[in-house]
View (tube, rainbow, N blue to C red):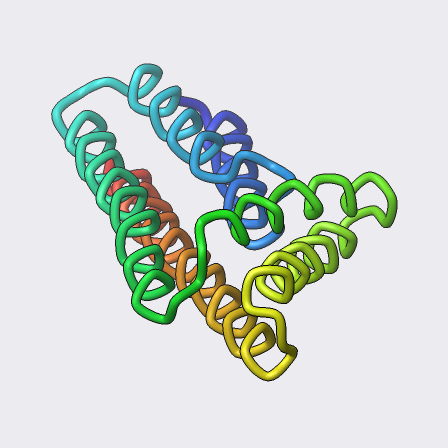
Length: 160
């Protein structure tokens, strides 16, 4: 692959990393697609090894992203309905207040659902905080997998 091709792949991976942090872009998909295109264009055992390792890192982080924080939130008593309402209001908030509305809508949705379910602010707010910690943990796990994949690609592109 040419130097400009690798620069473009690197920029797409960088955009993907931003997409992991700011959930507007499909970060993991962009990273995987960029590394896959690089592997197809570069060819050879090193490129396919890089793609395999990146795929495993992204796959493991995807599984852990959904299982570990979800279990912690269930243990803390956060209802699935609250997360669903938070997700719906997060999407609505994204369109009402671009970018920050996603976060504000999610928090408001979880809080209102938990307030409706638990009837008091003293119980609803800690559940909302647990939900926020779970979402933060989920983002960190996904970011770790994305950084491992990006690091593997960077190493592979330098060595290939």
